[in-house]
Figure 1 (cartoon, rainbow, N blue to C red):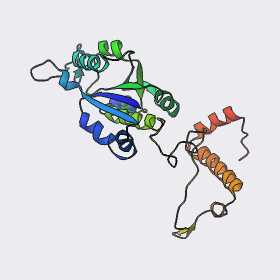
Figure 2 (cartoon, rainbow, N blue to C red):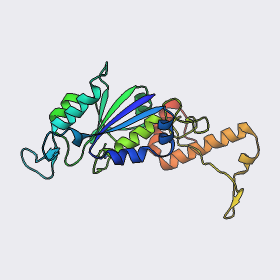
Figure 3 (cartoon, rainbow, N blue to C red):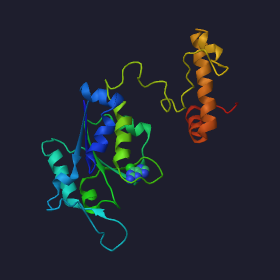
Figure 4 (tube, protein in one colour):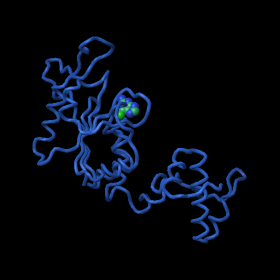
Length: 238
Ligand code: 6GU
């Protein structure tokens, strides 16, 4: 069982998103424990204020350090070991599948979601262990990125996926994009399902899928194909 704590000003957004589908089912079944903690609950201001103007001037508001630190201390007070704290920021290193696999080994993780123009640097220095971005674009807050990371990490937690859903052939597992999939009907808009898939010849199917994976990776992700060739010594004959 893996436990995720999310420090956020929008706990409903995060919980409503994650309560659904496979992650929701895994929480219900006890494979995951996901808790959103409302940073505003730790404000000591009479108006429950959590942000203020930036020193030095500039646009927007900055989240103040005290409520975040109090929430962090509350979450970690009975923990024997301090867990990793991931701050969601476009200034972090970019999240990828191997990072998801590694983070799935951690029993507990804390995600800190910022808003406005950012978070006071001093509390980040004090509690954050990892600065992570989900890609080179700017979002309004860290909630969607935290949900993205938790979804990707949870897929590696034992019990979360059943056998049919389980990781293996999918994109990135072998450094290539996944091959195309087909189901009934056998003919749709005059398009037939590739014959080899109906043949029952497992070795031919395996070869066909491998070729399709390679073709697709070359076309859509030349950067991944480059990397794949370096790692496997595969020659570019196609
Ligand atoms: Cl982690 N946060 C925000 N606010 N924007 C982002 C991001 C994170 N990753 C990409 N854009």
